[in-house]
Amino acid sequence: MAYREPAGEGSSGRVDLHAHTIFSDGLFTPEELVAEAARLKLTAVAITDHDAVGGIDRAVAAGRQFQLEVVPGAELSCNTNGVDVHVLAYYIDYTQPAALEFFEMVRQKRAERAEKMVSKLNELGVNLSIEQVRALARGAATGRPHVAQALVEAGAVRTIEEAFQRYIGYDGPAYFPKMQLTPKAAMDFIHQHGGVAVVAHPGTYHNDGAVYAAIAAGADGIEVWHPDHTSRSVDRYREMAIKNRLLMTGGSDCHGGRKLGRVYLGSVTVPYSCLQAVKNLREKRLKG
Ligand code: AMP
Ligand code: ZN
Ligand code: FE
Ligand code: FE
Image (tube, rainbow, N blue to C red; front, top):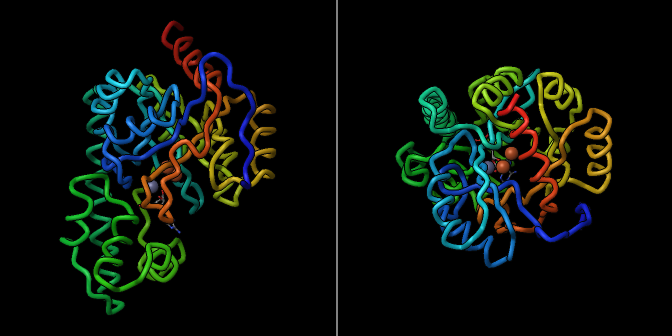
């Protein structure tokens, strides 16, 4: 394996702090995800759907049934100097109307963006309708993986990977950017709603300027352990976290098989102490 996980088991076991469900571009329902985490004997799993919190309550209910701690989260997309940076938002008070309004607005923007990408594909001579994408997304925060799968099902490409390579990757002819949220706006939103902000998979941007921008904007932590991180990235971001006195987290970024056909859940875990540190910061802020 390319990455290295932090050692340590302790009495509280291991946790996966990054996973997607059908409420964004994952394939597991919240219940399936929690059941799988329980089968893997994890002690906690975080639900971190892209720009969506709709799956959290169902996951928490399933967690009670399986005696597994469910960490409420979301993965927000922001953009700095043309680079997409993902920020994990743990423990935001997602039931507040202002928070729900924000997620609804982003969901709407994502739906419009999917339409733009389909138009671009049509201009390129690809036969695909927005209805085909909508049928797959089923009201979820629509992302490129939905467009990619629709392209596979329409026979325009053979694999999801090919869809990204030929059409909707960042440099692809049918790519259309997401709503432009600055790192500062993302961090402020998370903090205003009581959450802890962690820069997701920093090694995947190949642009540490963007990572530093997210840190400067107020990130509380860095996701050090991730399937797309080489051991060199792990070392680098571990050091960056220590130098900047930031929390360190990790997780599988499980999409239930929609990403390269791999399920991933539990493929990257961290000791419970990493989650405890996130919880401690949250508690401290609540008291302060
Ligand atoms: P979006 O937020 O709509 O821009 O979609 C980003 C998501 O697409 C990522 O979180 C991944 O799940 C997925 N993704 C990005 N690049 C690829 C790729 N080359 N192959 C498969 N999935 C990808
Ligand atoms: Zn995704
Ligand atoms: Fe991400
Ligand atoms: Fe993710």
